[in-house]
Image (cartoon, rainbow, N blue to C red; front, side):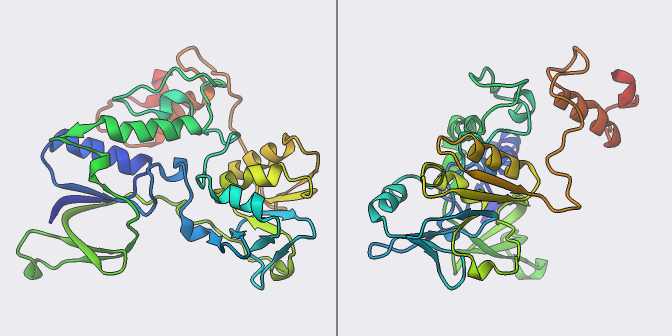
Length: 324
């Protein structure tokens, strides 16, 4: 029985563990992570549950997505329209031997350095920045080292993580049914169970791709990818001269990152970026430069002053707008 179980090892799961252990040094703490690495959105790999592999007779990679490409004649989709088969086995096998990366070179943060780091460990300086914004790969490296550098009662945060642990159900335990003080029972990986007094759900809102249902998708003969799997496929996709048309569907930051990565690829091709009629596309309230000298960029000012003024704060006795 654990004092506390945290589900997920993204930004908030890691920070919840660190904060709790800072206060309760000897706590029995367990983190359950469905992936084999930490980081969540910023992790260095994509869970294989979203990838279909068929080896060695007919290698195939199939990942549902909102990125559509028109492939060469050697590539076809299966009856579900979700798998692209490639007869060039050597190239495909080479791809599969690499880490299934979720981070790619043009994947940048939406949050500047001083807001992306944890208070107990500065992230600066970074070699690549634009008004504090930086490539996501630095967040990945930061989180990987963070769970190794924090030790409590002889155990690092990483030591307390159970990787490849997919939570299937959570049950509230009635007081009359427990003698060990447990309030929750968590079932994961089929029939494995763990009991805990406290529970934190830090799975976030981006664990599973949102797949649109598009008319005719089952008849599409090209390759389909979701942004979550773009990192693992970008080398084969962007350097393949047979891929002449790429259509990116969506209007938020992920779509912008993918469209930019495709447009700057060494192979010349047509890039189509589709945003629904009532969609706004990527947006920003202010330009990157800061409006005042107090902040390094406009993002810091927006979140620390504008949005913070709408949040309750028991420690402040004056309205935040007066501190500009």
